[in-house]
Length: 126
Image 1 (cartoon, rainbow, N blue to C red):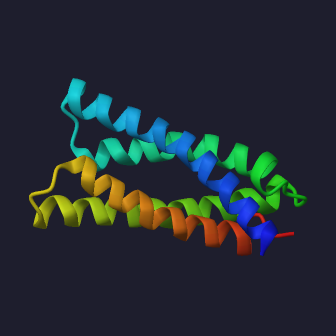
Image 2: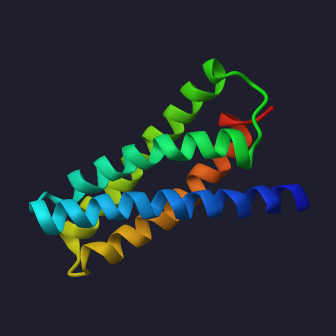
């Protein structure tokens, strides 16, 4: 349990870093370029996923499998996380009056747990 808690702590630290990247892109594109929120969030998610993979592979999980094994698994998990993120955003934007950043925070929290469990049990599993 201690090892899982350590990995979760590192995973959250990496996630905060990557979330900052995603949110910076999201806010910049929506505020400065008038992009649609879900599209801007999607682009931010993709960019942050590249950083996320690298940090989680080498730091959080200290993966022992090759990139040929872990990268497709990570891509699948990230892709499903991206779909979940976009779906939550779109539903929230359509059916609530909440500001888009609040909806994005809710989506981020849900996707965090999805990604951690998938990364721990499958993507970076030994």
